Length: 124
Image (cartoon, rainbow, N blue to C red):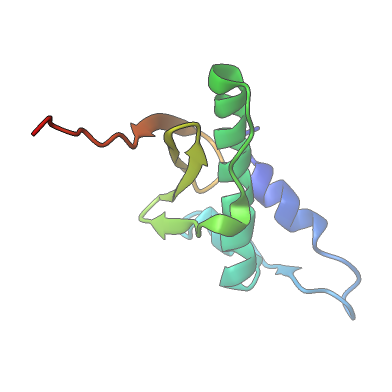
């Protein structure tokens, strides 16, 4: 699971004339996401896909559902990690997933909380 984003990125590299990504020499002082030149939008979508997959794996274990979609929320890069959050309807409330992982896909953290939408009515 560790280098999933880089693996997905490396699979996008094709022949030089049709490449959407090209490898460059590795500089250990640069972030891993710079090892392959990709459009930031593509990398963000890959990170969101990994995050939604992690969230769905946890939701499947806990609630028996896989409600999260990578297209419903953007992944954002903060310092050395990706973060993604999405909320979906579930029963009488919502499920909110917050997912983060290092830039190479390692150290994933998944939190899913239930948000209950209940109104209280007081007798008059």
